[in-house]
Length: 88
Image 1: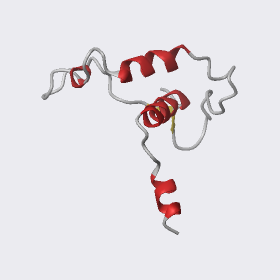
Image 2: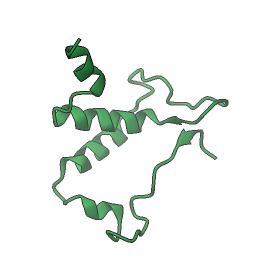
Image 3: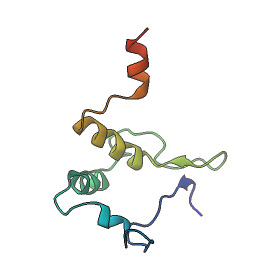
Image 4: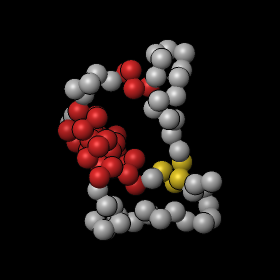
């Protein structure tokens, strides 16, 4: 058993659509982000938490979080925390 939160298998069949991969076109940038981040050696780059802790609630893998961060950066998604701070 892994100590990270595990997402759904992208090739697993579902009711609608057939596979999770069917949501994305072949030229969607998400595919490039996925491949790029998977090729990085996160431990060598200084990311903490690459090796999971033995106790506590399973965390999200830093690789998954980095993919979300890069996607948000490329699509100019502003984190909710930053939006709320600008109103104060």
